[in-house]
Figure 1 (cartoon, chains in turn yellow, brown):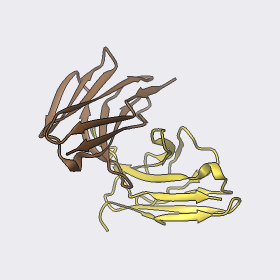
Figure 2 (tube, rainbow over the protein chains, first blue to last red; figure 1 turned 30 degrees about the horizontal axis):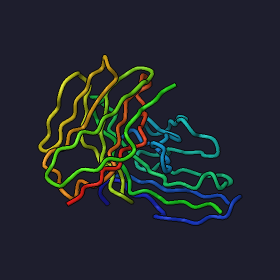
Figure 3 (cartoon, rainbow over the protein chains, first blue to last red; figure 1 turned 60 degrees about the horizontal axis):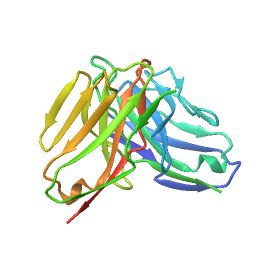
Figure 4 (tube, chains in turn yellow, red; figure 1 turned 120 degrees about the vertical axis):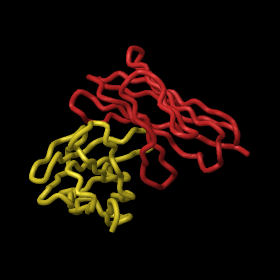
Amino acid sequence: IAGITQAPTSQILAAGRRMTLRCTQDMRHNAMYWYRQDLGLGLRLIHYSNTAGTTGKGEVPDGYSVSRANTDDFPLTLASAVPSQTSVYFCASREARGSSYNEQFFGPGTRLTVL
Amino acid sequence: GQNIDQPTEMTATEGAIVQINCTYQTSGFNGLFWYQQHAGEAPTFLSYNVLDGLEEKGRFSSFLSRSKGYSYLLLKELQMKDSASYLCAVKDSNYQLIWGAGTKLIIKP
């Protein structure tokens, strides 16, 4: 693989179900991010991780959890999905060492619908 | 609060020039990014400004005025493939990106 992959590509989920969105990068970037993108709104940060073993809360963390057991993987879990979590979810990574210039690279996204 | 403002939609003609504006109010400033996002795809990096002035990259240029909290993205010699959304994002005092809602650019032949 090259870059960032996300799985699944899309998912329809019943409310109340648990769901994990997967994200894997092979660029050895130390920082990783989860965003949601909703129509008419900018990308909103859910959770982030500056390095393996650490995580932090973003702007809209409620209802979501993350883990960062290693450099490559950063799964996002919805413990009990609700319809307001219907969105497109993007995972991103960035080389956080050195210049703050380093841009974020995005995965292809997961389109999640909660009914 | 933190705020990034961009026009919702713009229309331009193939071969022409278009300027997409972005104004921001954030807690701290550590750089401004422009990303391009085609419909149904992931955002991809276009440019970065941290000092005042113009950065040129081929057909695309980006300008920053920190005192005015203002940036613009200039696209020259527009091509149909430039039809996309353009996202402005500011890195705040916590080094997190605050994103605008994006400007949808429609290119007409």
